[in-house]
Length: 218
Image (cartoon, rainbow, N blue to C red):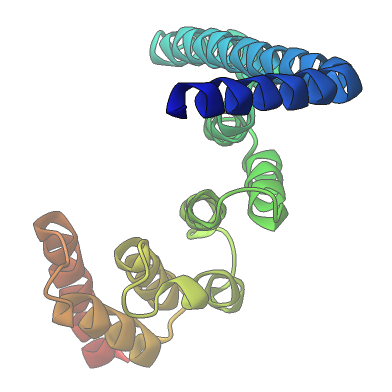
């Protein structure tokens, strides 16, 4: 008797499944096809992005080798091309390296590129801050202390990733501008930081000595 009931239940289930298939089978097949197509498209996109990243990496390395070989014109052109057509991360890195190459012959043009990178909110904040610091290195012996201070003070705060370079540049700029109080303030801030690199400490010690000598002679 139990077997008969089981057979009836199975027949009922088969009939229900058949009705469901007749009504929704086409939609189920379409959904399955869409899922397979979506997975395939995603895999294809991943492969394409990986290939583009590899191509951009190779182009960046080639441009860097041109810069190391002291071929500034070729390096500038290579970095400029990559900054226009590379993947997003490499575009920004290439733009920064292009500015480094340009700085050797045209400091104003280099600062303009650094400022462009720093002002672009789509760039990672770390790269924007790096661009600001690199502009500071170019300008430290050209621009007045007020300009250097405006650019770098926000980066000189505690825990900032570029605080060491920012403080050193601020101290040097203040010393060059004759503002010994500001020079000492930034030099002391740099030395008081327990994470300050040893090389920076040595340079700041020299600057502190120069600041003291300037104070005596004034």
